[in-house]
Length: 327
Image 1 (cartoon, rainbow, N blue to C red):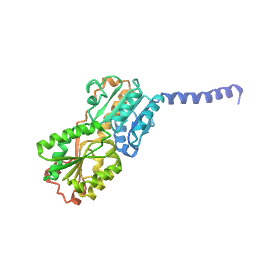
Image 2 (image 1 turned 30 degrees about the horizontal axis):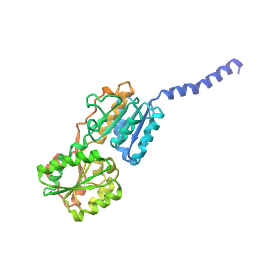
Image 3 (image 1 turned 120 degrees about the horizontal axis):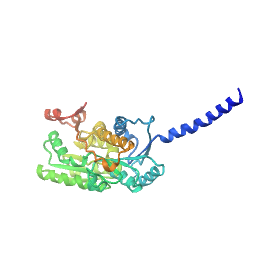
Image 4 (image 1 turned 135 degrees about the vertical axis):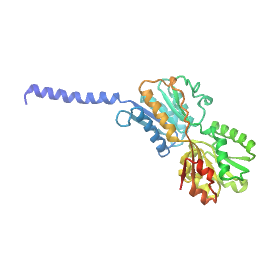
């Protein structure tokens, strides 16, 4: 090999890593900040990736994702958000309740933040208005806390003789608890049933709450929308079966775990909106100009096996209304 050719080859070899690094640096990085575990994020992740794909981004091809999961330890979220900011991610996506969104908002006023929550972001103070969120924050609100009355109506179709409903709430999530109890008190006044509150913020407290049912003797349980309860959905379904009590839940994963019935927004659909917004921001859109997305698709899911084991009959009207019946 002639000396000139060797120098040219050496120069090309040395330049290749620089080119590769430049291409890698050009790949946008999304930071995902979630209050729960990776397992709890599996279904939402499918929707999120679908939304990203529809916007032109595929993880591992033209976008990278840094995941941070707090495993229900809310005290870890602030440091995790700060770490994503230090890594200079292009967008921070939050899920698992409003706490991760607030942690991200506190950590940065410049990096775009896209949240997914089941509460009113205006009332919480996350955004200025739904139409014009303002600043660096927007996202998807899937309104699970606003559907309490409808859930009770559907529950009464399954269990017509309801006179007493126990409400499982997480006192650590004061906002969700306040809205849920307020809506149920209104529904109770209209429909004529009594409410008992069952507070629980840990797995042990959930078991203890169910243990009080022999004394309180409610006709059914209403599980408030809460990210922590979603992670305990198998425990809740097992306890409901053990105590032979009908339970209505806010979203589908509870029913897939053996719960009786749920009515609410599809998590997959909600996170698809979030993925779409994330893709638009990567292309240059500003969060302040993206109205908070409000999914309009709601689904009633019934577990027919659980109903039979509880000695309940799924009425023809409920069967006709249900989006899915799990056998």
